[in-house]
View (tube, rainbow, N blue to C red):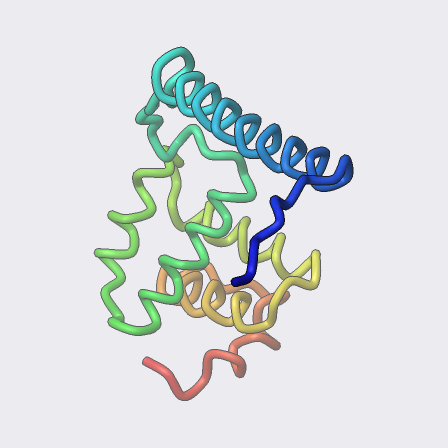
Length: 140
């Protein structure tokens, strides 16, 4: 008959088990503290700000999206109504300003084409916009 010899753990094995146990306990405690702080102590607060509070960059991006939608559906009145949420008094002048800023800053030609099409639909086509009319050509 074979007898089993008891296996004694070496110092390095004990240290490695202690390290893993400490790591696991640290992860659990850290996750618990993080969840408590994130959900109970300092929860996220939702603030419903109007679109007129957006910075100029985001207003410009919104205007480009509306201009792209205008190219897709040709609804000029709808585009103007969607732009009113930005709080600008003169929507055609706003679109012209954004378009000329995009052209002056050499922004994306496709975006400029969208803006030029909307500016043209609003009757605000300027000489600086003329070369970009071809980018939007062929679409409504």
